[in-house]
Image (tube, rainbow, N blue to C red; front, side, top):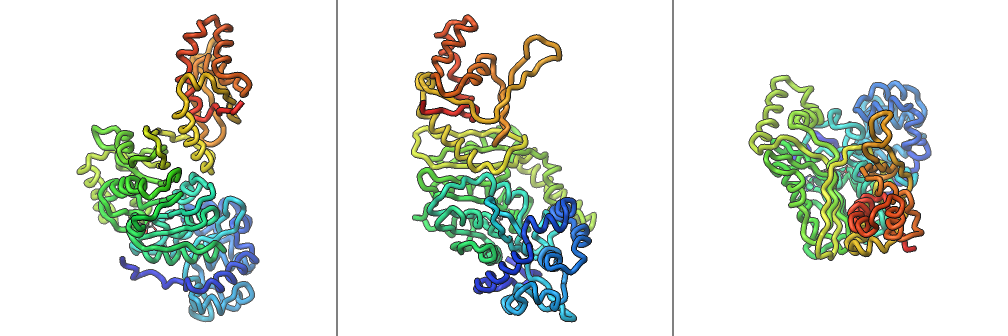
Length: 507
Ligand SMILES: C[S@@+](CC[C@H](N)C(=O)[O-])C[C@H]1O[C@@H](n2cnc3c(N)ncnc32)[C@H](O)[C@@H]1O
């Protein structure tokens, strides 16, 4: 792997310097909140789009925070004398965080981005220069080994990860170390792997600078660095999922054909999971002509695992090619070169009969169940992150439904989940709605159609009466035979439980 044009990294063997640097950054309010206050929302948001001009304008003064933003986020040199009282400059120069420049100026060797943890922690994510914010359209280097900071995919995965306390977690393809940093809060032991040794070095810096325990760092592809007898309670990976005509950038191009890297990752995760353990991935998958995309994904799920797969977005092949050409900054290259690259993407898709690409989340949970539950669904609507608890609850409901046949459901008691409203859909002025929708304003923000019995049933579920008793009362009210109502309604109750609209109670 070539790192020819990349900057030398700070030493990962000086945790004492990382700690002093961390104290100095915090003292200057170099935090996510501090940054937002300083830059204001528009300049802050522009940075996420790789646009630095508004932030440069907001940091023209000489306050400690302005100096630090220029140094660590905007790749500007600053006079050494100005940062002497702000940073442990000698230590930072000796251990390589800072680099001496011309005329008594210093520059940073890496980007450092303040990043707020879920419980208000002030963390720092280290990445290669020019890579802290925004997509790689603005990356400072096109070297194949460049290590990016936090992107939308990173925070999505961090948000959907189940955060129960566990003994052992694995972050596969750790990059800047963001997932390992999150895992270090609830896993006793964290192993972080990457094909790119530079990423492992940067992960060590991210953890040290954030004051997190060190992770076990291992170099290698996919599960290669994991010994055959090692298993984990949690595996997370935001892999290089891009389906591209040939590997170029290690952070995104997996180097295996089509969606093979994601498939391999999912298939091989099963035997690395402990009983009850979760594996959570972001992935891209091909929509191939003549094939059902859901069947394709179902076939990836390893034996012994339940799975919940959510397709969040689908792009046709032209949108997809353009997205990643822009991500690499190719649209700023020579037009003929750009056209040739674009053509190569479309050639690749044509050869593979790919018409579109799906983006989404894959969660596996290892279970001893004889009949695994595999849910593959499309949910492109907005959701309420973090979803870790929602993901955990999904699998708890799967267990519940597996253990309860229709008779058991009728004997059970349910409560309507929180923040659910009923919407009636139909023509204006019509006496009866065409259909009724239940909508939940939490978590996945689900909506589902129900019939009037389903809506009435959900409305009275407060845990007091069994489902069967409620149905008997509804039957009496609407003049329907209670036996036939008890016969036909469990399927609807099952769906409402599966989607989280109804919660079983012990009452
Ligand atoms: C999209 S980045 C994710 C980085 C980070 N985990 C995050 O969530 O932001 C993918 C990472 O996987 C690494 N990688 C690429 N190919 C790999 C492979 N075959 N096995 C393991 N890691 C790989 C890349 O070096 C990169 O650090």
